[in-house]
Amino acid sequence: MQPQAFGGRTRGGPGSAKSAAFRYPVSIHRLVAPAAGSTVVVGAPHHPGGAAVHAQACPVTAFFEEFWKHMVETGEDTTVVIVGAGVAGLALGAFLLRNGIGCIILEKHSRAYVEKRQRAGTIDSFGVRMFRAWGLEEVLEGDPIPQAGGGFFIDGEELPVDWEDDDSESLFCPQQVLVRNLTDVFLRDGGDLRFEAADVSLEDIDGERPLVRYRDTNGSVEVLRCDFVAGCDGDRGVSRAAIPAAALTRYSYEYGYAWLSVLAEVPAHPSGMAIHSRGLAGVIPRGANASRLYLQCPIDDTLAQWPDERIWNELEARFGTPVATGPIADKRLVPLRSVVYSPMNHGRLYLLGDAAHIVPPMSAKGIHLALHDAEVFARAVIHRVRKGDSSLLDDYSSTCLRHVWNYQAFAAWITEIMHNVGDASYAGEFRKQIARAELERLFTSPTANRLFSEFSAGVN
Image (tube, rainbow, N blue to C red; front, side, top):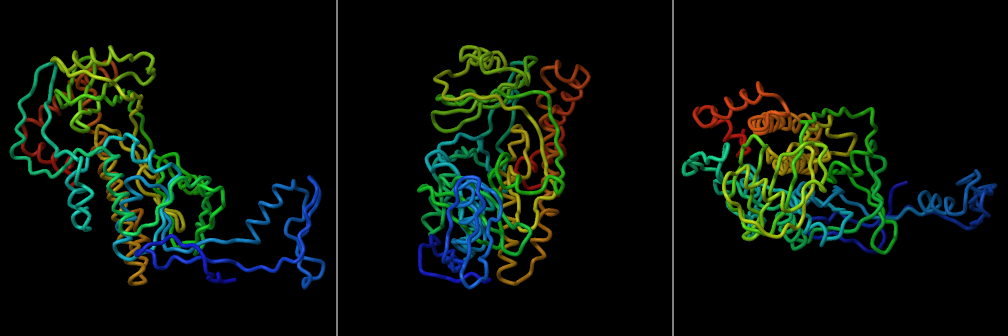
């Protein structure tokens, strides 16, 4: 039965003209509410004997849930449902909206939570140029900090680094700033973004018209029909979980150490990276009066082992110079790992960002890969809608995975160099000396430095 449009609420803006409410009409003349554990039948008089909807023993609650699900299906229709309002989901929504493609973004958290969620963030040259090409340069305005050359310290001595010839357009941009800017632009342009969407579930992803259910802030179950679902809800989201386990291959690597990641309310001084026999350390600006601190530590360490005083003492020891201290707002332990899921789509569900891959933070390529996925998928959907050609969608996974593996290789290489070069207790003295030779090559070989610069800028 084809859905029939009816007058009612729609939330689409200028970019979602296709959005329309739909209902599958049914004729229900008799509803028998059973006692718990009894057998129930829902019937219509013009069907002899009634139409059995749930002809088995079930509790009353389960009966009414099944009745609602199968007999009174209401909802809306759009081209793409995007699950997750992180960088990948919001960028994708902005790309589609500006090309007249209907989309709805669902986010399980509140807007306040999403915009304050602290995440690392470097927008490399690829990302900066991409936003400009899509007419979205304004999302880079405001708090983002032009990427200045931080210091590089080895065993307490600062290496001279010439940043004057660096033509990189990269920006230090706290992820919450980029998310806030993308949210503002998307909503200003009429985008449909629904926060606090609970109990999201995906159905019929192998069919022609997937269905997405969620519970809104009033507790009502909402249903969306779409052509495609973009799973942008991260490593622990519902999107990848909707794909049969047998249909996915997971590739992963554990590096064997962790980062203590600290958000401090203090200017980044000194800023940069430090290599020391006690392990790697980093101080990265996150605003005029905020910085993100990193300390390499054993993977089985606990936060209780890292009181504030120890953090400041350890940073000073690894940098070999006094560091600015101040209040610590947040700290967490992050095991370093690389993960890739293949393929990056199943039926009409497409995975983007952390839902499909994770890179260690040393590489600073999480946002890069999320934006690359969003752009590839957006172009594929636009091509399908405008020309009726699905070839780019068919190639989505292979196109993205080639890029993902290229940057996973870079991430693994730079992560192991930077961590093995200092503390030999993880990989041994031999690997430490190899790492030191590779690091020295970056400073002495123009060829090696150029390759490193290409990956850092995201243009390789």
